[in-house]
Length: 116
Image (cartoon, rainbow, N blue to C red; front, side, top):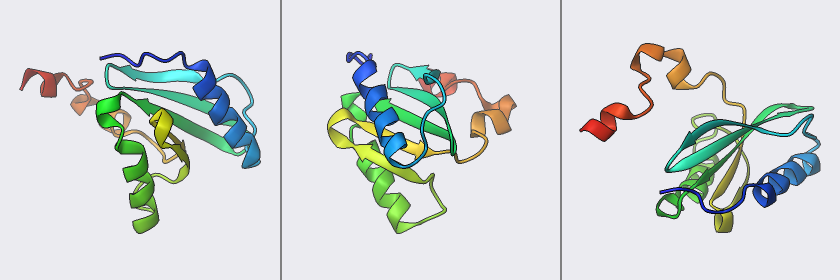
């Protein structure tokens, strides 16, 4: 599975949303995580880092579910800056160190799951 849409309209949406939140991007976003099921871009902004995640259609529920959980349990999931269910897009505030970086010995990029 790949994400078939060209990312420019998506990253432009995220950049405009960040600007509207007084967190203007300082440069073009960088792709920091790319898997067959999702892509994540990192935006450096005037208010710190922000992340845009887009999933394939089978995971379309992730963006609205994450927003729901962020409202239900603030501080327990990353802060959601915006969500666009039609684009399967989730715009998140920086939530600190990714688990795969905090515990690099356990970070095999999902290979263990694929072997299971």
